[in-house]
Length: 95
Length: 370
Image (cartoon, rainbow over all chains, first blue to last red; front, side, top):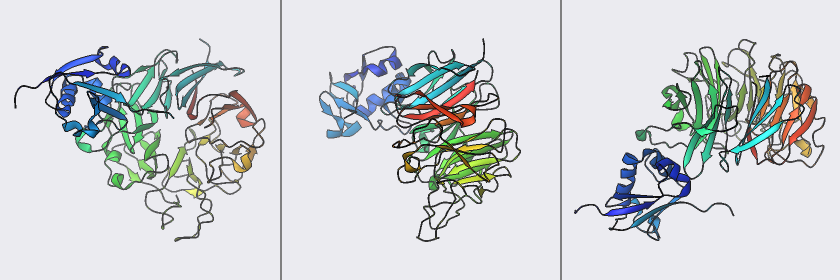
């Protein structure tokens, strides 16, 4: 496996307070799981908002790689390519 | 500063704070804090400089604990919220109870799934209390309609009483190191055995300050007509203990329903206790006519308090933590409804007035004189 590709994580507005106001984070990771593990190490407060104590992505959050929900790809094992944008979004609510 | 009556009001859309001078003529409201996020538990901590706490159950980003050190003018997140150890396998769903501990910064916190956490630094860090959270029974408790929640924490010297829905009443007599189920006389309506060792759906427990050993319980009643295995279980919903919760007996006779959620004790009279009987099917007061019921003799008889409350066509629910009583000489009761009204019952509930009539659905009401 070569060097991990550099990707961008887009942080939703309500969570920016947990990463010093950053709207985007640039990290290197082969998979979404590795990207989350990076967040756990480097942005622990932000990570706790995205994943619960068991390491699962919180139930009412969706994680997209570019325009695809990882649920429709390979879950958190979805592989990442250089320049990919990982977006974390709350599920739609209301009705 | 003159004493103020402070109310913390946990709602579906955040926590509100209301305050008034001692005559309690009018309350000023501020909030919501943690806007848009449900708040199921609050605490007005009057040890030293007052601190207000509120749980904030964010459905997207998980639980937070909010703290105010300026009498509820602003709230900020504590450094962390309770969280299970990673290898535990459970994940926090909600916070149902916040209570003050022994030392100034000692806090206890009951959560869903039913477990107990403790903070020794005013809510900035939390540790699981293993004696109950990892109890042999813990993985056998089942969630009720509201979830598997530890909602009641009562400290009495070295005793700690816990109320769990559905787990029952658990008692520690060593300061919270170990716990055992203590449900003798506490009925269950939804199991073949009417009096199991544990697994009862306890709704709330209250303890008077000055009656040694006395406790009151609102249990999940409404099983008088049950015809299945074990037979009918009338009057299991409202109970009293006089031996520190080792055994319980019914005091439900005379109430229009033994089902309900909150139970509140008069601050100066241990024999005076208040409940709000609800019809089990609708979780609203019988006949659509809200009323608080009061006993002044420890549950031997009951009287209806409804002056000023709607007389008909009112179908709200008052949830387990949505009723409280202040500690003034002639105390006032307060309850919040699932339809967003906050009511005050002056003179111990003799006369009711609506303080606020269009709040979000109310989950929690706490009052203190600060």
